[in-house]
Image 1 (cartoon, one colour):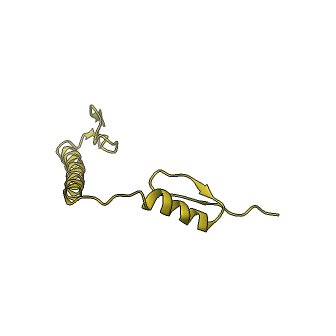
Image 2 (cartoon, one colour; image 1 turned 30 degrees about the horizontal axis):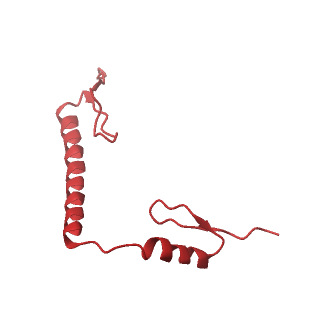
Image 3 (cartoon, one colour; image 1 turned 90 degrees about the vertical axis):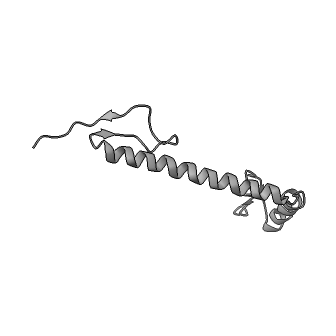
Length: 97
């Protein structure tokens, strides 16, 4: 006999598993939905502001890396890490024709 497939909760960081869809739905309702409290308007506005600031910061960092690359084509700036660049440029010698 094969074991029945389990279903897992993927609500936020919850990793609980259940033997049936019905038990999963019961868990979601009792553990995640019912305990929730509505957000106040000022909390919603604050979250939107934080989201906008995060997007603006990422855009600014990305733009700074691009402009540094354009201004100094002989230098290779590691702009792919989370911080938006490394601590120092790495020399990239040009080939002579």
